[in-house]
Image (cartoon, one colour):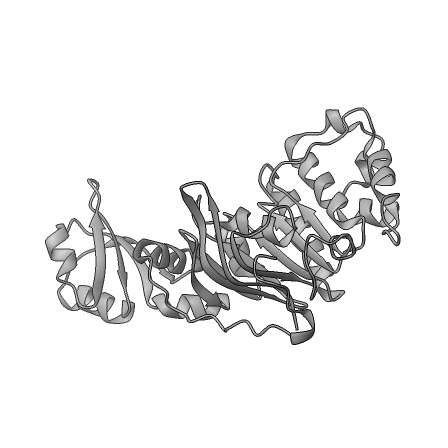
Length: 314
């Protein structure tokens, strides 16, 4: 079952078109990463799912209903990029206040533990660091006990330990059966934790698949070594698809056949050092997709349920 769907959605703001005839789905029980460069339309897509804006054309469904309806919004948690927090209240008081807005909220103690805020429960929100404020925003997103969680750039401002704890909390939420859609610029985190990755570029969906499937579209490996070769000599090595050579003689190249390339270096008697070989990552796939602007994986079509179909423009 899909917990959120955008069908043929176009969103314009005056002369700017943020989304172009976009079809996108978020599946139940999955952690889905929505990736794209700045201005790709990620925040616009999340705003539509939160019912904060109405699409210029197309249909938006969340939990089989209209995201602008109160009954639907009560089942969705949101963690925006920036949150206005009541600075005079403590962390515990803030969560207690927000819990009172919901019919069946999480226990405040449970939300504190989930967000790693137990030690900060008595601190006023105005005295929290940037990373601590993000953790409180996460706790507020969860306090309503939502079925679907929409998160925009969650780990911005968090230190390494806080990011690790945050991803562990998301994995626990997924084990509980909750559905999660998030945007992030930390592609290595998305590669490690996401079940599916959606890549947006200029309002179009370029790819929809698992991290492994997207990496397979790029294939090969990134190879680095120092050998004093010129760029022309490096490009002439077998299987090199792209390459650059720094002033210090370090070659940085991409190849689908790293073993063949290294065998050629040895066979030619080329002395080299500082060798690094990295298999293609999600970041490699992301850069390849967004540089070309062409879809690589065809997303599955959205099939709306007749009982839940809303009029165009909903």
